[in-house]
Amino acid sequence: MTDRHALPLHVQISEMLIRDIHAGRLMDGERLPPEREMAERLKISVGTLRKALGDLTDKGMLERVQGSGNYVRAKAGAASVYAFFRVELLEGGGLPTAEVLSVQRLEKPADLPDFGVSGEAHRIRRLRRLNGVPAVLEEVWLDGRYAERIAPGDLRESLYLFYREALNLWITRAEDALGLAGVPDWAPGAFGLASGTQTLQATRISWGQDGARAEVSRSWINTDVARYVARLA
Image (tube, rainbow, N blue to C red):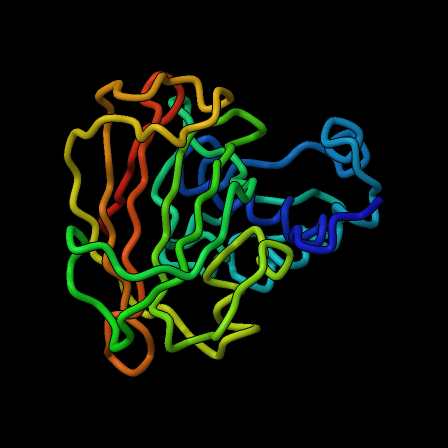
């Protein structure tokens, strides 16, 4: 059965390649393998691969030379669904996916930075994987004014894409603060770190298109498998 909340397959492949290019796993000027060979390795059809490569070409990150092949064109700031997602596998890159653990509308905790206008927020807890490897435990608090109710089944793999499509909320910038924190007691066993274990935590404040703070999130990163990366162009 197709997961209607996942990104279309060709977009998943395009996003994976964008992250590999930004991580330096695919270098500027590098020739990609022949399309049929690449499709077989990725276990997708040639048609799906060509749609993904077409997306990269439209973004200026791939040059398709007739009779020669497809060549990487590294480009900073290219449009990407995961442009704000700063966590990669230790070896670089990795396609993010998300497992929703819970969604509740609650009063805002006093220990969060000030954000939004409502006294309540939607708390979204997720386990993020990179290429299928559990890497990040995520707790997002979205200001309650943007929706009366959000059901787990409403969400997309990319929350920012969901905000755009369903709530008309565009996250235009974000600020991250890094520190150490204990893994929370609601962490599932699949995360790989026990409750209370000290690990890297990123606290993010995100702003919408109106300049107001729209959400605050806390992410616990399993540094045995992943790292936080911010690239400056």
